[in-house]
Amino acid sequence: MMTCQNQQQISAFIEGGLKRFVKSQDNLEQLQDFVILLNPRKEKLLNNCCWECPHCYDLRTYVKILFDFVNETMTLQEVEKKLQEWDKVKASDEIIDNIAIPERKLNLTACDAVTGKIYYPDFNFIDEIEKRDLFEELKNKDLYFIYSPIHLEEVYRMKLPYQEERIQTISKITSDNYILPMGNRLELHKLHPKYSYERVKDNPGISRALEKSKIVNSKDRDIFFTEIKNRLQREINNIQNVFDYISKTEFHKLLSFSGYRFTVADFKKTNKSYDEILHMIYTLCSIMDNLSFNRDNKGRTLRSSVYDIEHLIYATKADFFVTGDKKLSNRAIEIYSYLELDIEVLFIDTNNFILDKLT
Image (cartoon, rainbow, N blue to C red):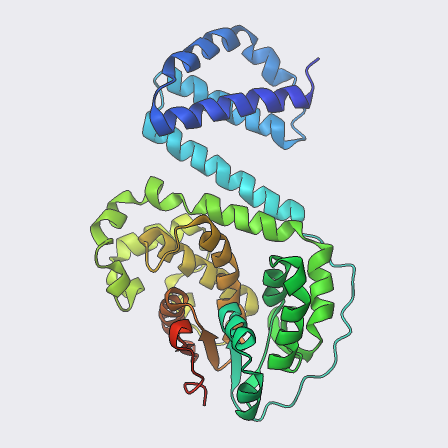
């Protein structure tokens, strides 16, 4: 009897062959020969699947795509779409598999009394403050900064010698004022970031899974939305009110594709819950990706954009979102405007980094 390891090897071979053909269309004969070899064994092979592991589900999916394609019941374009859809399923499953209930309890205390506006900085801003040693200048402005768990996720990606310094930098800038989801809302508390960082270290797989999912989903634009991408690509980054600029038909198609489960009117309602804001911002970022609106394309920046989305979510508890990333700034302005959230986006150019914009 075949083991699931055998199923994994066969499904990986089929997957690799199909993806190579989609990319270069130069191994059709090999695929056809493999179908001839596999055909008399297909039923037995599938009957031996346990249907309890991902390898068996992979095998069933890739065998069906292979046979449909070779038997000409599926076009090359349909093969590309089916492969992408299954990659997205696998990426989502990996995220779910890596979600763990934190075992480490947080010793939260009451946050400082908020007497003015709240500032939420992204990682670029924190990095510049640290590199330029602007702690005193920032402190003299007497502003209320907060940090979130996603800042510590980004610390985890740094090289070891620099992690401790960045943790202390976050503490200095924010005075340990910490925002995190509690129930279905965002709440402010007091916690030194070193304790939040320990939680990140307890579950490192989730960050890798989220980054991988972002890389997979970045391919959607060129597979499912080539027509709208090609039509708008020259002007898209200069469009204001981008979600209202495209047609209602296109917007609803993009909404549906992203898995959005609410109505368009829900975007505009007041007193949105944390879960609603999270889902809405992820949806709008997905639409921007598929429109190519201020989109990152390189692997490293694509992975970082996962954290950018989370920053946009946590910043909804603040009055100001401070960033040194121009593309992120442009996205934040569009998203907060569409959601009718009263959050001012402050872009501070890292090439001319001055703190005068902070009032």
